[in-house]
Image 1: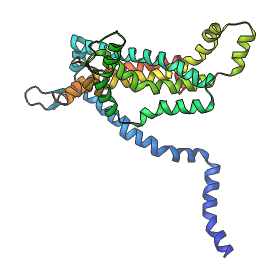
Image 2: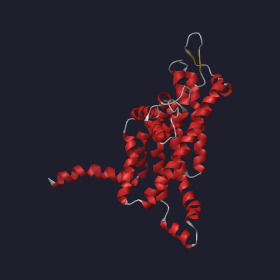
Image 3: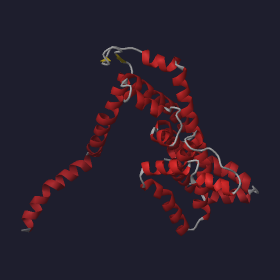
Image 4: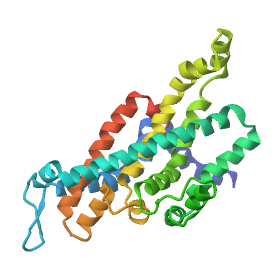
Length: 299
């Protein structure tokens, strides 16, 4: 019986020894499935999207003419409406990113440097819990909260600061976006601050630096990659979102809405594909800047 079990074990041992001697082959076999899936599903679809941007819709038949043309890109470059949509979206993304950075940094610093283990775990839970709830539920909740008769105006009125017209405004969108993406800013900053060794802070204090100087010259530069990493999430997620602008926002279009309208209501898929290139280019530039700030080291 022992001999039979030993003989059955031989092929698996030989296979294990073969992969041990050829580790590069083992790595290839492990990477082929995910890379193949990413190539077929993501990169191939992205290539089709980019190709579609250089086609055009026939005005009379509504069919797509697959003749190469740059007319869609020229329309985006020269049309003031598309330019305003782009600037409005980028401005909102930048405002949300700045707001989340201002809110997330003190919270992350408290979690790393001040809070006890139990408090830190509780704060982690509070940061992550919103990510477990439905996106649509949160969006409609903010629609109710920012209504003219909603809780926010009620609170302002009670303290004599309101009421204000907040329903379906850019302010309402900014509040909703800032809430939605705040966890994506807190976690990278927390990770960056966790890597700051206590010895650097102690050395700064021993050399006579005050708390403000230590923050500016030690903590802030080392935490900057975390802020940059978090900004990648907040900026890109705001840039491409079209649900919150529909539910909470104004009648002014954003990039996500424009793409949805062109490919859905208007049925002009080539123009929608061309507009989809705009956030891709913006994010390519943004990622280049973030990389120079060390954002990828904090991810």
